[in-house]
Length: 187
Image (cartoon, rainbow, N blue to C red; front, side, top):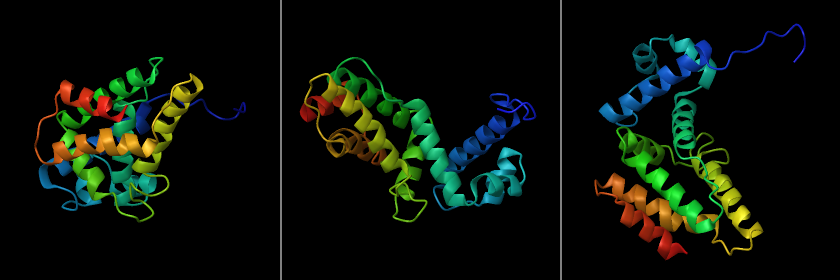
């Protein structure tokens, strides 16, 4: 950083505005479902100008994708317990807590709604699927370096994450035993 550049404070107004906008999105998805609100409604609920939302995110789809990615990355980080089984159990338990929590169903529905192939879709190169695959791959690579034989990242998605998301979408419960069973079957 040069001497003329002001030091940035961690947090501050920008972080506060981002958190307010993210919370407004989560509440609107929970109340109305995906596609049933506008940037203007998000901005009004968050107490910011529409132009602030467009300046920061560019489009409604970019904002929605950012909400899902930020939420899941913050609440379900990749663990490093020293073993693949421990990492997978810890990670799966984190994801289960997140998607069954107060706003979990809204976030899962939003993730599903945004999973299209467009440039902002969660299945796109920088979307949720790509980000989760990169994160899982880092966990699996660590296991391989320890001499373990990890499955493919796609197998973790198919056999651990997907069943939990489906159960949440259809209103079925997720127990710790169920989550551990998914990991056991995968391994």
